[in-house]
Length: 208
Image 1 (cartoon, rainbow, N blue to C red):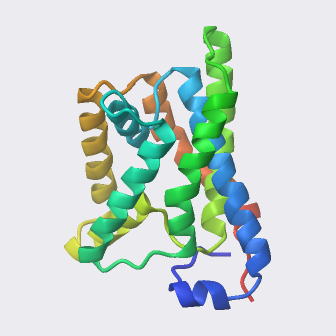
Image 2 (image 1 turned 90 degrees about the vertical axis):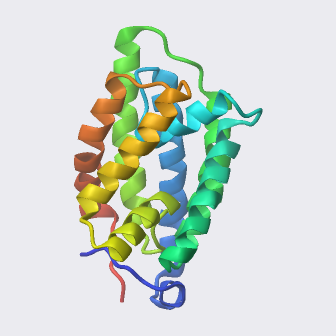
């Protein structure tokens, strides 16, 4: 089973739409839950959330709203890159922010180091599962991943180089704005890829 890169029309005509939509929104919900758990663990967050939390120090908005607005602005950058958003792209941009605000409202902060490590570890597993379910639904890349692939296609630079440059940029800007950088930031960078890859074998939906 492989990951596809379908146009919006192909996404809707490729079959198994109810199952794929269920996979999409369960995956996005798990992804938002993992984001909230990582934030509550207070060990450091992924580069994009360093940026989001840095912005939150200056904007009188909830973190979820900041995530949504950032996603929308990134989608505008898709236009000169000639990237086409899919259903999953729009859902990612709008739904994750709403779900994140809900989970941050429900979940308390974690203070004991042992519990912080345990919560962070569980969050990585949930994040990997959620990301694999979302990607495996074949409804298109999220705004940030689409920016990466668009820059890759337009510049000819490798995915690795483009992703590294993007994440270091948002990490640096977020850190300058006071976003939380910690051991968890490094751990996330090292673990999220293997965690997501592990769950692909069960979550990528086979298309007819």
